[in-house]
Image 1: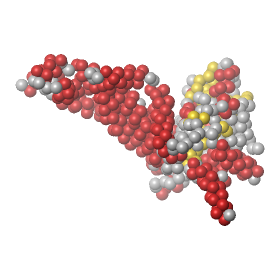
Image 2 (image 1 turned 180 degrees about the vertical axis):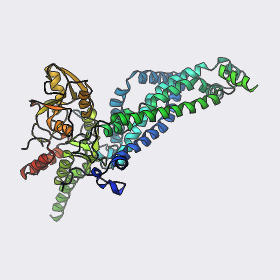
Image 3 (image 1 turned 90 degrees about the horizontal axis):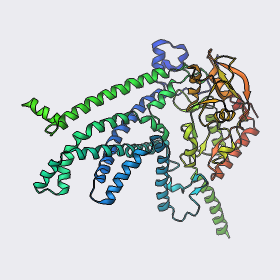
Length: 306
Length: 240
């Protein structure tokens, strides 16, 4: 009779998984692939996809505001837009993710601290410690772990959106300039105001010039998610590294050697499929955007129809 | 008079409440990649010597604790900015770290550091040594002026030796013994080094009450011998 293992075995899905040392081949594998740890791995794919689904439109909104700001006729707006694109693009991503996020978090807490605890007398910075009153903590210190995780996730979305928004702003700024000037002049000749030409002539036509640059950004964004772990969000690369690492029989029911190559291989397939899917979708989008445009692509489409 | 006593009692009670409220949940930060100290079990939960120790300490200090994992690289910055309240991750007490954070008393004595290599005749001084970034081991190799390659996780340091990228791994002996289990290609060198102090829990310098609570709990575990039992069970270090 063996002594019980020192680690907890957790809940298993299949009845036969109670004693994995007796299993082999397919049944072993099916038990191995349904451990709680693997479930967390599968969930992290959802986390990454959700992050991309929220970040992409948010970054695009940031980029649009940055680009619109950078070509604004109002000087302060122009300065803000230009500074944003220049500074954020210049700072290395990893520095941004290590320091900016902590600073952002502290800025939120500082503002809440000022509002919620006006009669607090202690210094907020004590040496290297950052101390705000408990009511100002974000999330509150006693809230459950999932709230902490959700908050970390949204900090991540915001940071990704700011970083990729700066690149998108530069792409959109260039795209806005690429729209033939004659189009704008024609709009003005029809008596449109500056605002009207911007929204009715410039914005609808700029996407065809912006799409190649934006699709590059999208491809980079897909592969930037491992930066998430710096923020405490466990993404697919973290889990692949964790699950693939050597497991000695002392600490698990499923000992195995260095299997990282298999896990990273699975990630490779996932990324390639995702890239392929993105390419197909972007290609279709490009065809739609080209329709009726004064570009060689638009011209080719027109001739094809005729 | 009665009212005075009552209000004094109330005051004492609220002072106690203030501490209880600020730490109604104590968040324990660990790495989760350093067996037998801390690792994720098959269910994906934090497990290991420090999980069991931490839970026992929290029970003795009457605290509600919650476990979170954080990458080793940013484990101290996230403590000082308040994302969790305690670091319990096999962290040796050093002067350098003590300038930034506070430590409780040590819960394991200083443990020897050892080398793992592919053969017994490797000389670490003349070869390439792999160690985890930001550890006392990495600091020691750098100080000796030997060739050092650093990796983000302990797992990668061992993989580097297998791949021939490095000649030896330099890490806590308890971790290397665990990594050696069931492996036939690696050997532990006879050479051992004593660096750093014992291992303690890292706590923000301003958090004196929490530090006192854990110090008292560690003392009580040392006195009744339960700490030594845990150390032996997980084979993390020598006993007190």
